Image (tube, helix red, strand yellow):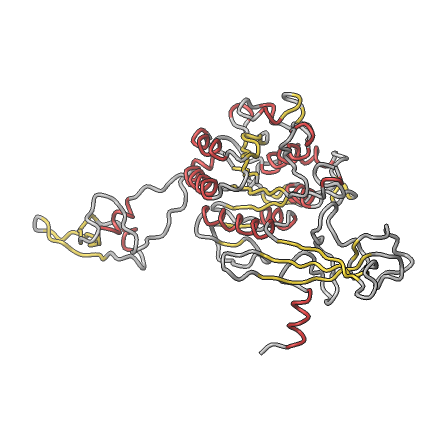
Length: 452
């Protein structure tokens, strides 16, 4: 999992302060359960606060004062943490609580070349403590090159040339085959490749603002003939989004996320023998809720989270969470659900002629959860034997023996037993793909019984 952390100058600003919680004891100069009288401050007597305006006689004159419980006063005078501080704490918690997950870290270039793009600060590895120990060294500075930093990570994943990372000495040069020029390909990593066989990669992108103008990287992306979504469609135009000047400008970030989620046959390492690996993108808007992050997560087959707003439906926008830590946990929970789906394929055998197999292929699927009850399903596909295969015609030409869906399309991700997204299994009429809770025998039985 690669975390891309916004280290622009605004990450040094104060974060929105959490609401007062009467069940939390706040430290400070006041006795928590005591009643105190302090100088009048209109911010203390807002609607819903436990404070009251009173008049006190001082030296023969009535003075306006505030009477309030000490715990609220301690909260009120508590300094708001900086955004970068909350990000560091949340990433530390995420890594420490998930020792079985390999993490990497990318950040924005700072110093003389701030705003140029991003760089790989730590490669993805099992040694998450290295990232944790280094977080305090990240200093907010410069602009917000959201697309440029993401493009750097894309090049890193796919063993291409460095885009702008060569302009910082803070990068992890161990991932480069030619220092300052090219990233290592999968084969050059030796026994522990970056892109592992039949495993997907995941990106969590954290930012607190709109992007800087990124016309240069957009031009580079649109002229890149190797970027083909699904292996066929080049990126030749990108949509406009609001930038940090309040203007609408082109940004190719969602298109890049779409490419990583659909790199085409052979996957990220361009090797069909290792499976069709992809990279899925989750976004976190820290004190921001913007269309760019929604579209990036949508195109990248992930989920968008935000710390502002009220939306709770991931299909209509970014999902609101209480804080950045909750966003990380939400993203990780979604990722672990995807990566932990168990699939067990089986081929039907003719009971009367044991040497002959039928053309049915059954996939038993289970989705682990925190409870002891896991969701399960059984899905049916077909072994292609020609146009006699149900759902196939003479126009469908496949290699005999491959697994197809009810529309006679190849049903599995290349090099794996995972049912591809968008495929329609038998026993239903929807594109249920690898979703355990959708379609299959489970839905057929439910429809047959009815709902009571």
